[in-house]
Length: 167
Image 1 (cartoon, rainbow, N blue to C red):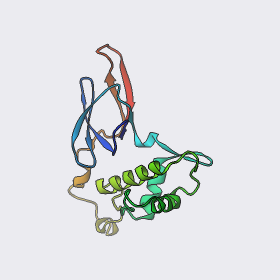
Image 2: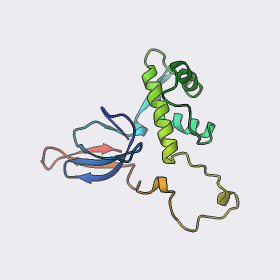
Image 3: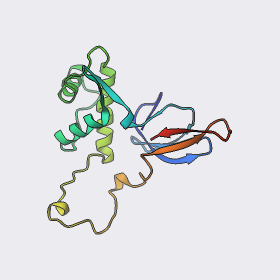
Image 4: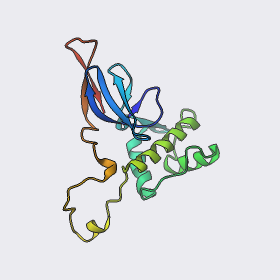
């Protein structure tokens, strides 16, 4: 998930009395986020294209498949390089609405997702041999992600009402 006013991506760790607790995918630091802070699930974010909007999830999945789960260029690369790579995966982006800063964030988020293990190769040796994983263990990068996607209820101003947030 993305947090308004903060760079990087975060995962939901737990619920707190007045909001949620998230951990940065970049450095693992935990933050307490109030129920009024803007929280955006990745599947709710889209990129402007000439034909409307295209969900980031679709773009990231296509990019992960094309790059075989490997990282892309650094988000600190030159603007020309970033535009070139971004244009390969979103060739019909709206040049009037998508800025270079959006492209840099897109590439940075993709690389964070790769680092976190979001694009793990599904065709590992055990799968190719038809042998299921007997341990049932998750890769270390995915441990503790239960509940990272879903809807949470965050209390508002101590009243009985609550606000639902998709994460």
